Image (cartoon, rainbow, N blue to C red; front, side, top):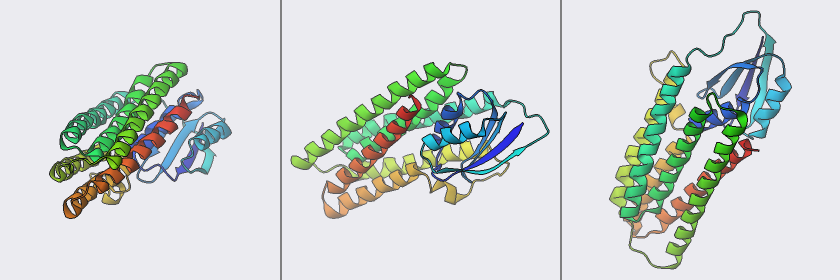
Length: 265
């Protein structure tokens, strides 16, 4: 049995973990994967084919690098906590999808493109978790088909959002409700923190996860960006900050969708 450790520089949230698991799922020699988001490491227990695993990780373009690879005598069984991991994935999936519904609804009511864009980011994360759950026990081709549909759907929604932002830049619109923007984004910030806590706690014996790990998450940064834009909308009496954060988040959503589509090749 071979134990190989990779450092994944750009793995800073559960979405990247799910992408890694989906990418390596098709390699039959892999017995188990232990992924530590906080330390950005992926420990793979497998039978030979280290180069294939390394190449698969490099294709994700997450800044992965080989740390060590050694032969171990003890046998490593397949993960016996599948049910527990599936329960955790369902939890974060429901939290993300629930906030997608909340943010898309309040975003439309308050006329905030920042909230609408952030809701799509929540939906994008929901897609990744859903694909991970659906992939359990399914063939690689089925998994890739689902990933492909999810990726294209995300891009379509993001492009529609960018068109709407452009329209609002050209034509005068009423100011978005900054109170909705700030209040809902604070709740989304808390929800993302809870998701990260649940996922990290499941892989660690520590009672608490480090605060620095939470704030390296792209989702947390997005939430803070929407809050900041809400404050600027109030201070400047202008919708421009809301439109700018909307553009940024829509681009992030498209970037995530393109990563998913790479898995479908």
